[in-house]
Image (cartoon, rainbow, N blue to C red; front, side):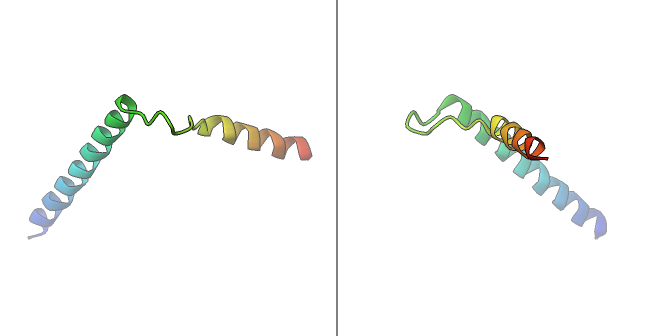
Length: 55
């Protein structure tokens, strides 16, 4: 019974991972031209530099 539960959880995890990968690939190909480009890493670097500058 526990082997069946482990197999089911692994199957669900792989299925969700596959859905996320496909969703991200589709999002890369079909971008919304009205949506602004999100540069999250730039924002994080800017916030970190501001925090360090204040010290």
